[in-house]
Amino acid sequence: MAERDYIHATGARVVVFDGGMGATLEQFDLTQADYGGLAGKCHEALVLNRPDVIEGVHASMLEAGAEVVETDTFQGSRLKLEEWGLGEETLEINVKAAQIARRAAGEERFVAGSIGPTGFLPASDDPTLGDISFGKLVEVFAEQAKGLVEGGADLIIVETAQDILEVKASIFGAREAFAATGRALPIQASVSLLPQGGKMLLGTDIAAVLTTLAALEVDVIGLNCSTGPEDMRDAIRYLGESSPPCTASPTRGCRCKGPMARRSSPKSPGRWRRRWASSSSATASGSSAVAAARPPSTSRRSASGLRAACRGSARRRGRSRSPR
Image (cartoon, rainbow, N blue to C red; front, side, top):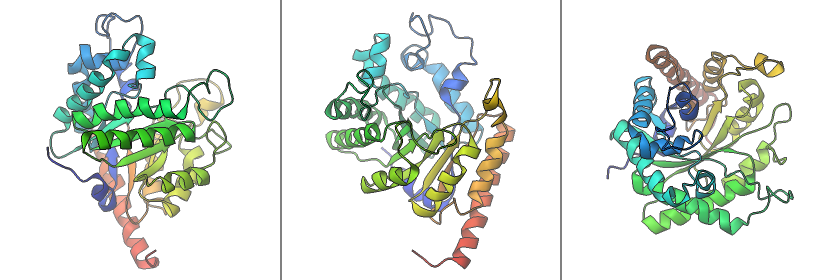
């Protein structure tokens, strides 16, 4: 198996990720049969029943300029799949999802094995949300990560995290999977912050996030989702000045009425990504960014402009800063 060096890539340039798999699939006219007869939309079921659809989404993102595609496994842990009666297919779904992404990406671009939250908050004292042990979470994440590694992922991405203890469990689980498979991958961890406070759901601020994840030797640290680029600005600046390569993936826009609708338009994340890449938030070792799912011609321009901004920023930092 060819080994692509994701960490080297983040040190050399801005690495552009794909857009949202789930949001893209929601635009398709898929039937209950496509989801294996499930009474609802479990997108991970498409890995088994409509792999052509998933591969087509990956291909469209790559055509749009993405260098990294994420597997269709955001809710691919056993805990989430059991809600759909698919718990026993956990390993198969994760292996096949990584294989599908690998076919689409080829040997030159990267596949990120996506691990999302389980729905539990282990650090919470809520009798329902907190009703899970750290050891059980490690076991759950190890199973999912094992499938992603075996399927050919180049890195593991833990994303949209709301509880720093769950993030820690996912990292422990991923490393158990690395030991079991004999293949270690970079780990990228991305948390979500609440608006107007800049903290995770249970109160962890960005400084505590960085301290925790740096101590765990996570390779790339960042933010995703949240409520839009404006609310992420200060936290991204802090990570860019203080952390290893960092990643920023803002919500692309809100199709809703009220205050949230004014926070972000579908075009605004692109403007913010260029600002981040040309400011101190793009560290000397590089940073990551996320390409919105747009028509190919638009996304290619956005990706190339972002890389150019980061190159200019790196040159300026080289002249003005002494090495750390």
